[in-house]
Length: 232
Image 1 (cartoon, rainbow, N blue to C red):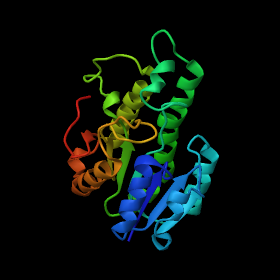
Image 2: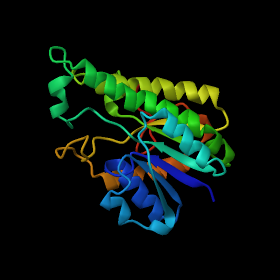
Image 3: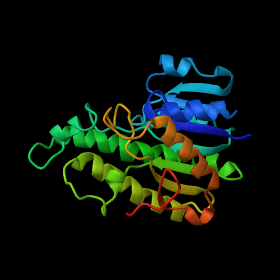
Image 4: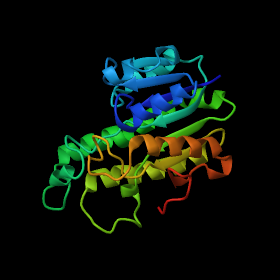
């Protein structure tokens, strides 16, 4: 059976994906900057391979893809992401009109956009090897232009909007797999903040159901955790 690959696997939605997929009896490749994270080591190690990976290190991504060249991957969750050194809502302190930190903005784009693109391109052959390869680029409702009625958070919003257009482009270039952008909802994670409305476990459970039901016709779409379209 093909494996599941998840980036940003040591916390938040990534960790929850690892937990739930291993509990479903799937073999999971967990990629993280912190491979010794206790939360990962507590999970079913018989179903889990853990690799140290920083998605801004493109050489390391290529090396891991080569190391795993014989493995088919049927779901790649491009989850590694950041809104800078602070989670929501504190990240607004350096991402508004009058207080933009451009260095942080560049770092966010490196992780959320360029890193995601590099992971996708490096592991596309692994996805194509599966009977039904699915690339899940973890986006956000904050990446929706239509839903932007509040302003601020320019660095994070632009990274996710760009991720969405990247996803549509990959769907055009790669008809051999399904590529989607996922809006998981506002989840209680380090990034989303503890004031968020959705438990990560609930969000990921719905995302996994939605992923399992995806059709090729949905490739290139922006969907929520229930599999419903999100406005661009």
